[in-house]
Structures are given as C-alpha cells and as structure tokens.
Length: 67
Length: 531
Image (cartoon, rainbow over all chains, first blue to last red; front, side, top):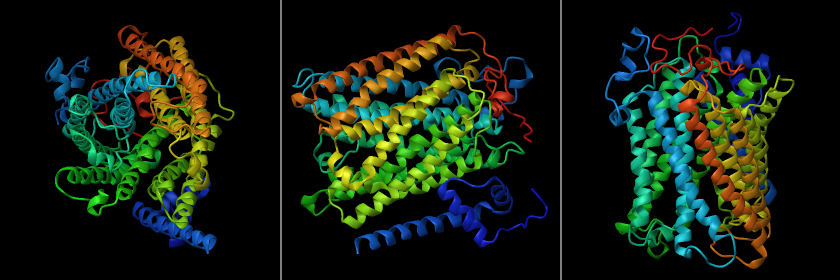
C-alpha cells in the first residue's frame, strides 16, 4: 500500500470501480489504487446502488423500445 | 470442536490418526474438514451413479419410438428424480466437498469455522437422499412433476411429493449451514497476510456462491412449503380453483432457480481458475477482474429469472427486460473466458488429465453458453421452449460445465488428498471417452430440439429416431466410462504411486507449497506466513 494514496476513495472513484466490475475487467494500476483506498462497505453499498441503476437503465431502454 | 483444538497431532510423527472413534463411528462423529470433504465427495459420487442409472432408463426408453421398457408415469418419475438427484445430490455436494477439503488449506486455516455444524451439514444429506429414493416405494410412486416441481401438478401428486418436499427442506438446511460455515471461515480464519485479494480464486468463487445460497435457498424452501400447505392445509397459493396462481410458483421457483445455476457453476469456475494457471505455469491472467466478474455474475443472476418463463404469458416489456438482462450476463462470463485463454497464451502448457478436463470444460461450456444466449432471445425461445434444445443446452452447462470440472478437480487434488497418483494414461482415456460420449449424447439433441422434439416425453414420432438412437448409445457409453473413473480413483487410493508434495509444477496455492502429500489430518494449526 502506498502512503500517498488517500485513505478513503471519493464517491466517483467507487462508482467507477463498480462500473468496471460490472463489465468484468479493470486496469492493473487502477485496480491497485482501488484496492488500497476503497473499503468493503463502500463496495457493497456502491454495488447495490449500481445494481439498482442497472435495472432502471434496462427498464428505461425497454420503455424506449416499446413506446 | 475437537478437530480445531486438538493439539496432539503434531507431537508425534503420524498425525494422520484420528483420536476419537474408529471405524464407522469415526465418520459419523467426525468434525474434521478433510473427513467431511471426503464424505461429501463419496456421497456425491453415489448419487451421481443413482441419478445416472435413471438417465439410462430414460435413454433406454427413448432408444426407439413406442413404449418398450417403462410406462409413461414411471418415465416422468425418472426425469424428475434424475434432475433433483443430479442437481441437489450430486453436483452441489461435490463442490461443497471441494470447499471442505480446500478452503481451510488454501487460506491457511486449521479447519472450518463451525466444525460440528459442518458434520451436521453433511449428515443431513443421506437422509434427504433417502427420502427422495424412498418416495419411489410410496403409493403412487415418486412425483412425476419434473425437477422444477411446477404447480398445479404438485398439488395433485401422491405422498411421494411430500417426501420430496421434505427432502428439499433438508437439503436446503444443509446448504445454508454449509454456506454460513464457508462465509465465516473465509472472512475470519485466513492466515495472517492472506488478504482477500490474495486468496486463490476458488475461495473467492465459493465466498460469493455461499452468499448466493444464503439468499436463494430460503426462496425455494418457501416455494415448496407453500406447495405443502396447498396440498394439506387448505391454502391456495398455487391452486387456481381456490383463487391462487400457478404462475406465481414459477416466478418463485426461478427466482431461486437461476441463482442456483450460478451456485453450481461459480465454484466450477473457481476450480478451473486453479487448474489452468497450474498447467500453463503462469499466474492467472486478470485475477482482480475474475473476482469482479464473479461478483457481477452473482448480482445479475438475481434479475434474469423470468427468461425461463417467456411462454407462460408475460407482457412484451417483461420479455424485453429479461432478455436484455440475460444477454448482458454474457459480458462478465466472456471476461472470464478471455482471462482463461489469456492465461494459457504463451504459457508453458502440458496436458495432464486435469488440464484436459479443464480444456474440455472451456470448449463445451462455450457451446452451452452460446446456446444459452440463443434461448435468452424471447422470440427464439418461444419456438424452443421445452424442446430437446433446452435439454442439450443445460446439459452442456451442467455436465460439461460442472461435472467435467469436478473430474478435473478430483484428478488435480487427488495426489494432495491421498498422497498417491492416479494412472495418467487411464485418466486420459477417461477424458476422451467422456468427451466423445458426452457430445454423442447431447450435441445431437440440439438437432432434435430444433426439429421440434419436446422434452419429458417417453415416446416420439418416427422422424426423431436416428438422433435418439445415437444419443442413447452415447448415454450408455458415457455411463460405463464413469465406472472407469471409479476404478481409476480406487486404484489410485489403494495402490497408486507415491505423489510428490508439489505434484504439479505450476500449482502455487498453500496446500501445494506448504503441506506434504497426503495433507496431514490436522494442517495449519500454526498459521503459515503469507507474504
């Protein structure tokens, strides 16, 4: 763990990490930074928010297609 | 707790001894994760043989058109019990067996967190299995409702249905206790320095699978309990005559059923992720992305269930939602496939039996995954629903995905478990026989399904005869090949060559690097140092 990494990641950084996790890949350097700065609670909360957003996006697309 | 706290073992040179009972009582009272892992694996193999015989009855009946061997009612009982026994009795316990054997060793723990509960988790299983089998001897026989146990048929079945419901309850309890054990062990008992992101991927896939089990098994328990009260206590959850809704059952069942598919396949992904790097002599490509992909597959698995139900009546918006969600699961799954291929890329590959089964898995699981995508498309699925195309698809996932992986894992870890090597030539013969006969059974079923042959029928029109004959011959070949597997394993245990501590050059998890072969009865009483 590098010392210059901030102890807590910003909301945006967590959101970005979760987005990439849905895709299933992550750049090594970004991953190293994430794993040093993002805590498990942050990941779980962001993951649940991400899943809800994902469902809402799908619903919107469905609406768009069927309207 | 004796297995956890026992500190006699390392005082004398032979700590393979159990210090409690001997004989059968050793196995009944054991709290040792290795003993319990062994019990799970042998139970699983026994049920695999029982379910396999049922599959052979099905294939024998389908060898030619017309009714020859069994009556249609018994045929339905066979398809139902084959499915239930293979899913709940063979595949799931096999991977719990792997988890018991490997997770403590891979994270540097002395045993599972709840050693006595572990014993109970296992010993519930034989009783559940017995209930399933006894149901054949009840008035009306075993339920012939299909492994999905759809209402309203389940409301009409004989007493065998109640046996099945209780068996499901017991199996569910066992799974939930096993999962709690795995979660607690992985989160609390890792050796110092073994951070989550340093764990072998097998432990990661099981951690996530355990959460899936805890979330989905109670849903199944709820569904079968509602069936039970519909049958005996005058409720009408699923009984249309009383104002209930049979489609409700399907929603509840598949809300469990789809995560169940990933409960079966994620530990298999974990095993593959141990074997491919070992035989490529390279670390796993994209370890972190494998963890990410596993987690996202787990989340997505909860929002795709109704793709099993496109034809039961659903608004087009529903069909589209589940279609989009299902096809998107292919993305993290493809990320995994890519990572396995990239692990092999420019690796120093050798093709021992575990690697052959792992490659067989990659090849066949890709086929099963793609046929899954075909079925995910609502417009296509409406044509293919309940045809042999679906049967072919899920056997590519369950047999080539999960079962081949279990074979791969057993060949891979047998030297560590028993201290003895299997016969490599015979192992390869087993792989090729399985590979050829598997495709003979199931690849042709794609053609049958596309041509319109429905599943779960004991008789069929003449035009389906040729492919059914090929499929049936393949089935008997596949079944007999598994006797060879039994011979190979028993031969290895009784008189195999002595295995090296690190039998596979490229294997790098703790059980290979820090423990002798066979792994001592009590390992890591003092946690290893992980850097």
